[in-house]
Amino acid sequence: MSKKLLPLVEGEACATALVAEPLTEIEAAGLATVFKALADPVRLRLFSLVASHAGGEACVCDLAASFDVTQPTISHHLKVLREAGLLDSERRGTWIYYRARPEALAQLSALLAPGAVSA
Image 1 (cartoon, helix red, strand yellow):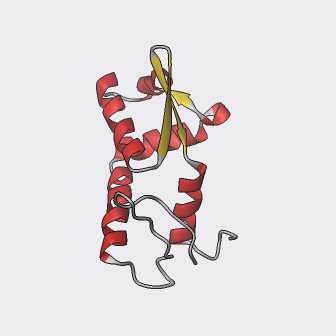
Image 2 (tube, rainbow, N blue to C red):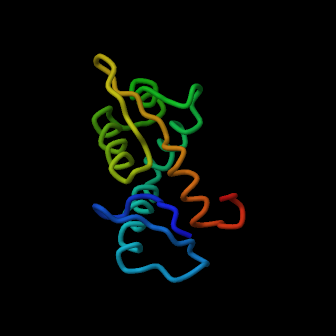
């Protein structure tokens, strides 16, 4: 099981399903960062909105209207998700477009439900 999963800390990657063998300290620390990013209700909802958005990507301008927080707050939450390795972004003119990283979704699925995802 040598597949690379979500980045945990600089230069490290998780290659273990939770039920296959215990996580190392480094793997656990890195995964905690990913789970912390998703543990905030606004970020979890943002991640879901981006992942389910038509075309697979969403502009920050499309997302801000769905929340009762300011646009800079939305941008901060998107930055946290991006730094956790869950989203990619691309600047187009004045706006930044976000898309869920398919490999991140697959890797989280494999980590949490290893039998449900084919290798």
